[in-house]
Amino acid sequence: MKLIKAFQQTFGKIYGVLVFAAFLYFIVVGIFWSYESFKGGQFNIVALIFTLVFIALMYFRHRLATLIVGIIGLFFSIISFLGVIASYNKYKATIAAADQHIGIIITFSVLNLVMFFLLIFSYLRAFIQNPD
Image (tube, rainbow, N blue to C red):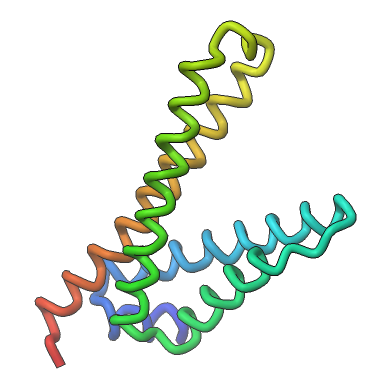
């Protein structure tokens, strides 16, 4: 509870909880990504760095660093989302058997977009409420 209250002091009442949820989401995604890579017999340094960045952001609660990570993540999420949509439209006939998985991938991409947008908006909202 103290951690959530610390986020509420940094980002505001509602946005503090939402930013905390976004950080938890990205940490879980990073851990799952690392696990899947390790299970496949490889060590994925990018997944480890991704997880460590969000753990550090959660620990320090630095608003400007959160904004920078949010902008970079939003950029890559948009590229990823457009790539998923383009590949789905291009190969729609050949991947008819995998349509259920495409829906999950598109949902995951949209959720990433929303979470990164939340990190950006929370900075703007926190800066407007408490500019120091």
